[in-house]
Amino acid sequence: MVGEVAQQEDRISKLPDELLCRILSELDSGEAVQTCVLSKRWVNVWTTLPCLNYAPNQRLGDVYYYSENFVTNFLKYRDQQSVITTFKVDFRFMYIIILDYALAHNVENLRIRNYENYWGSTCLNSAFIKTLHLTLCTGINAMDWNLPNLTYLYLENVKFGKQISGFDNLKELTLAGYFGYFGYFEIFNDREIYTINCPNLESLTLAPDNRRCTFVVSAPKLLYFEFRSTHVPDFCAVNGFPLVKEVDIDIQIHDYDWESYDDDRIKLTMRNHIKMLNAVLRRIPEFSGYQPSPLDKLKFLSLRGLDDMPTRSTDHVINYLLSNSPSADILKGNVGPN
Image 1 (cartoon, rainbow, N blue to C red):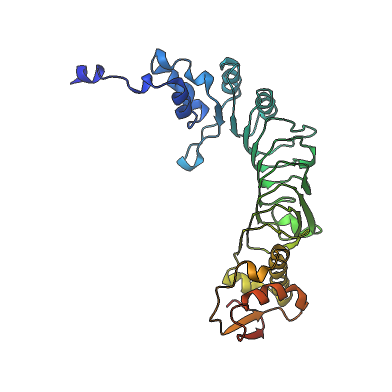
Image 2: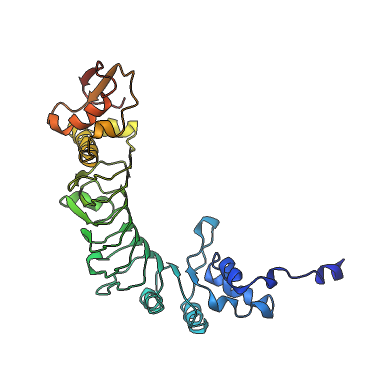
């Protein structure tokens, strides 16, 4: 039996290099290097990987972090002529060395996590980066970036300054977590205004944890807008989103949150919610005829916490909801958890 197992055909080793590289690119770089001991066929495969992954899989309980010696030797002995398309980093040292290496090899997809120090005057300049994914990175100033071909940008818990602009080819943008002062320190600071000015942006996702913030968005070609948060910020859509096709707004306020809110905060939350809806939808041409309301048997529409709001801020939304139920009654009352 042992002899039969030893004589079995090694079918994996007969796969083409391109496919083997694709398989190993799904592993972190430490595991990829270890495959060199499998056979002579595997000795140099790791040196040509297009995806360098220094991000151990924490979901699997992997707490291994790479030593400086390992990273240095890995970069030194890999095939320097091989193209790098994706770079993933998840640890707290040697960022400048790794970043310089990635940029020097014209990486197209860059993913960095857990960078706690400041980049200082380091600027992110590359004509090749197309997707950039940053998580838990502080001290970054997006205004210093020169990424003319960037099409996808994801920032989570990243202090990036107060403006995202200059990315003429950006198609998809996600902002999540805290953008400025982290944690509860933000309550001691003035309201932060974040400006997004991207002329070709098609998809925008906002999931802020900041309580005190205002968004000013200029994205005339936006097709998809998503907002998820337990807080509702002040929101302004410059000239609206006339081409938008899908809007997903999820305000996650639980019963215990309502109990802790005073009347002023409740009114502010509801007012900002309506203002966001109005800002997103108000510029759609002939909105009521664009997509008729499905509520053709609506009996009444209950509005809560809007007594102090100007009528013009809610007219667009109310008229749409009542477009197929003109006889429905409008009820007004105090806002509450129900």
